[in-house]
Length: 206
Image (cartoon, rainbow, N blue to C red; front, top):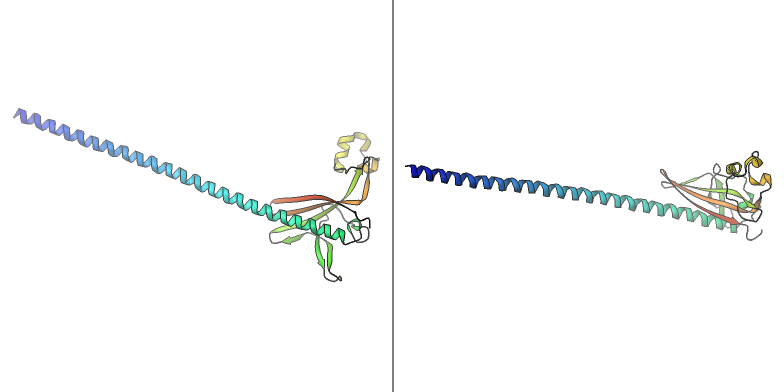
């Protein structure tokens, strides 16, 4: 009887050991599955983030290219306007309003024969873009170079000598160039601004 009891106890222990082994293996498999699922989830979320970033960058590049096209288009139109008008009569030298507060845009004057470009005060809206052409007078230093320093900076650079001067012209450090104009084409899309700057001269002397 004792031998049978001993055998039963041994069998029972073996069964328990086997069950424990199976239970342990199941536990490890469950943990491994959780880890694998977590890793897959992390990779998936990362890929989604990258995809959204790529789309956002692609949209930004597309918008920037559109803004650049609109700006360059206006610059070419201004050049054409310069070349088909008389500078000081009806051209760039005859403008009365300058600066950021007086933007222009170009339109085709259908009343003219043949039709030609004309400058109109105010910005224009093209789809979701706002386009402005800004003209500024140009000053040149004593060596003939274009002065790029804003008037408000003169006092900081030259001290008391220019305290009451609005520009370098008033203190004899430069002079206005009536045959050169600074052109800034500004494109605005939502909160994004893109601008292109160039200088045009009265190269035909007319």
